[in-house]
Amino acid sequence: MIWQKTFHVKPIAKGRPRRGKLTSYTPERTRDAEDDLKIRLRCSRPYKFTGAISVSLLFIFKKPKSAPKSRVLPSVKPDIDNLAKLVLDCANGICYDDDNQICDLLVQKRYGPVELTDITIRDME
Image (cartoon, rainbow, N blue to C red):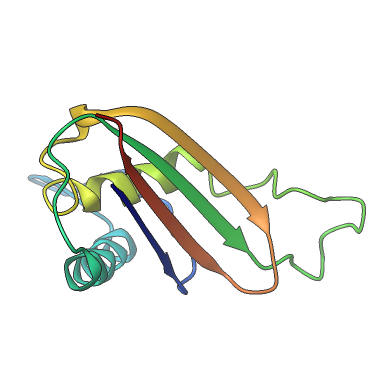
């Protein structure tokens, strides 16, 4: 089985936990992005994967006008691993039982006309 969904929202990287006076907390921007993505995943997921899976993530950003014309790829922040972490953490428990099921992971960051996050999950068994 293959499940693929494109969300037309700006890709957000998972922020590092912040330390308060007594406890650590997730930054508000990260928490809001996680809540939004979890709702979108719950509404669009037809089933939950139970075996080994392959996950492909594509993050599209608009090229800033200040970027040099020679820059073809977005080799700037946000970091690709933090982009993937937010999506994978949100999909955990919604699209699949646990992230230990992920055996293949392809993550790409590109420039394009509209900002979006594309998620593809494939059953490997």
